[in-house]
Image 1 (tube, rainbow, N blue to C red):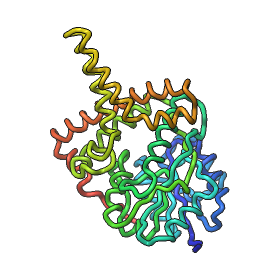
Image 2 (image 1 turned 135 degrees about the horizontal axis):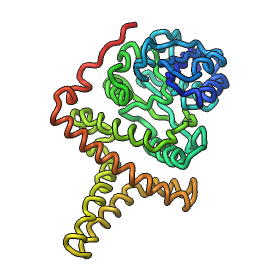
Image 3 (image 1 turned 30 degrees about the vertical axis):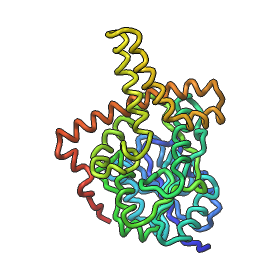
Length: 337
């Protein structure tokens, strides 16, 4: 296997809590030829001091600009033939970089390798994190193979490919990965590999998680309108229909109140469809954590599916009302090197 220089780029904003674990894991990589770059996006905690203590080269954005701008700044200052982006709340497994380089080297048609997470969080301090970690891990396991989107928490991409496709769109703070994946997939293959793994520190605060899920769902609507087959849209698989079934369960609860108990069959049928759509995931959770945790998982997943459904409706309304929103992904800006 070739051993080109790999520039590991870690965008960070106020994540000192996990940054040391992230950088420690990167320092423990088996791959021998690395440069480590942390791009700090105007943190107000001690992230910079943590990064410097691990010997990373620290770059700073002039203003808080989001992960897309931070990744672009890191790529513009990288010297490696391969760029390996790692979120600051992810600890990569020791062989993650080596495996990613090997996979890229095996086929020039591959433009990016994305990684998956273990089904346990990096910092185990809340049930919500346990839920989110299992849910995300399962969804990524189900997607392993060739994909048509991009997961940036663990992402290896040849520098020449990044230069050809162009930088992340710095206007996007939440869906820059999907936008980049749509652009990249037009020219190269993207693969999600179980050989590139890490451990993720997920959100422990329900309000933060709801905001992220709601915002990202709504912002994907212009993309789904343009490319209905794009992963996550109604035509791309059962996940979106599970959210529809969750919303119908709640909305039809009024029927037995208005028209009699026989109409209870309608919300029950919607609930059954909602649960059936994710039955393989629930089996996975039961195997991993047992029947007791499964009850919490199902309840939390139902709630977040409601959030997704409401967010999608909000996104559709914005798409209908706003030309600017419809054109959100029209002309990605080009960052100056």
